[in-house]
Length: 166
Length: 176
Image 1 (cartoon, rainbow over the protein chains, first blue to last red):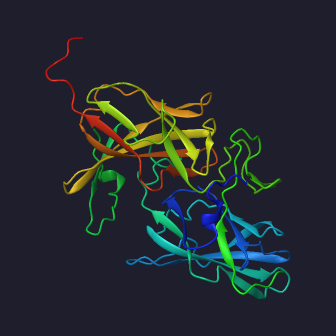
Image 2: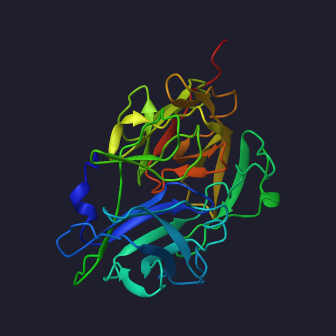
Image 3: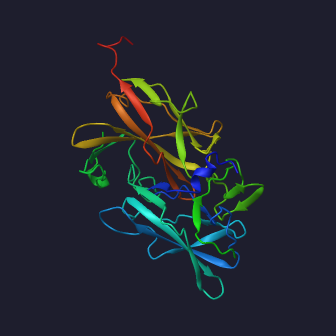
C-alpha cells in the first residue's frame, strides 16, 4: 500500500472529486468495520447509489443504482468503472454515496455502507464541456470561450456554439 | 461475513504501474488485483492527481510564469498525490488540452483551450506556445483534460489549485 495519507481516509468525511464528463479517477473503496478491519464480502453483490446533497437541481449520476464489482471479497474491496455518461448528465454538486450489499443468491439486503453519512463524490463542472470526446466537434486550437459567472460562485458553461473563436 | 455495529467506507488509493501492459492492476499490500479495464491503457488507481510543472517537478506557486509574448515551452507532468514518484503514462493518451481560465472581476471568464503534445519518453505533456498564445497578462487557472484511447476522459486537477501567471512584456517593440 503506497497511500501516504492512509489513515485520514478511514474516519471523517471523505470526498472523491471528479469532473463532469470524466470517467477517471476510478472508484475503488474498501468497506471496513468499527475497528477498520475489512469486511468479508464473500457471497455478496454490491450496488452503489448517489444522492445529491447540494442545493439546487437534483439528479443522480447513477440513476437508480449500479452494480459494482467486488474486486476482492476477503479484503472488502469494491470498484466501479465509470461508464460513458455517468457523470456527463449529472448536475455539478456534492453527492452522498451508499453501497448496498446483497446476498448473491437470495438477493437479501445484508447491510449498507457506510452506516454514517460521510462519504461523498463531488462532481464539478467541466472545464471544456466534454469536448475531448471522440464524437464531439474538434476544438480549434486556441479557442476562446466566454463563460458567464453565476451568483453563488458556480460556473456554468455556454453551449459550444456560443464560444468565440480567437 | 463479518457483522459490525457500523460500516465504514474509505477510498482506496493503491499504487499504479504506468507501464503495465494490462490495464487495471491495483497493488494492495502484497496482492495484485485486476479490475476489468482495458489493455494498453495507463493504470490510474489513485484518487487524487495533480499537475507538476517541468522543469521543477514539484509543486510551486504559481506553477508556471511567463512574460507576454513568450514562446517558451509549457510542460506538465501528471502524478498521483499519494504516489508522486511516478507520472501517468502519456502514451495511451489520444488527445490532451490545457485550459487557461483568467481570473477576472468582469462578468464573464475567458477560457482558452490549447492542444498539448505527448512525450512518452518523459511521460510529459507539452506545448510550444505560438505567437499570440500568451498575449494577455494576468493570472490563470490551469486545467489539463486528457482522453485515453478507451474513451475515458480525465480532468486534472479536480480542485482547481494550479496557476499560470503572465506578466507584462517589455516596453516598446523588441528588435528581432
